[in-house]
Length: 114
Length: 110
Image (tube, rainbow over all chains, first blue to last red; front, top):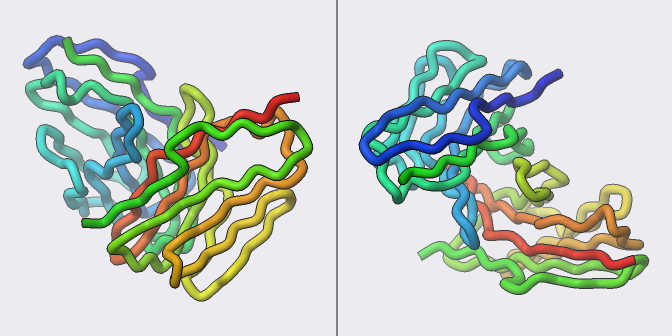
């Protein structure tokens, strides 16, 4: 099983550009999450989804958008990229939304906005 | 405000010794506490979780304790090996919200 697959692994964007970070999972998990990780900081939740067609904001949603048209895919859209969005982005999934199961993370996308 | 604090400095220990990592929290009542391992350039990997009504959990060389009075979890790796070198994250869950600590970097020297 591939688990959670993220693409691309690296990307450099210019200020004001847009891009979509892709995330796919093959474990039939209903719960999916997008986090960003900055040096010396804990993972911060951007958006999450409890199932196809349902998404909600996390702790730091500004500047991002998501969609969940299928159980497998949960893309993260960055509109009008800003230097503050330079970070490592992780997608994760879980079969439980109650904290009773661990999250499976992808390998991350390292994004630099210049 | 809610805060999760892990050992702010890196932890260096000798192979074969027990590594003990700390996760403290304030203004929080987690129903579950989880521990993850993260290697450089990789995503976190789930190790184990403990519920609020459990005091201790073990998995092979790993042991986690959870003291809701002290608001603290301890993560132990016994008979540590150089392959255990990584950053370890604690995560607290309550009310549809999973929050992660910044992690502690562990180095096990041969």
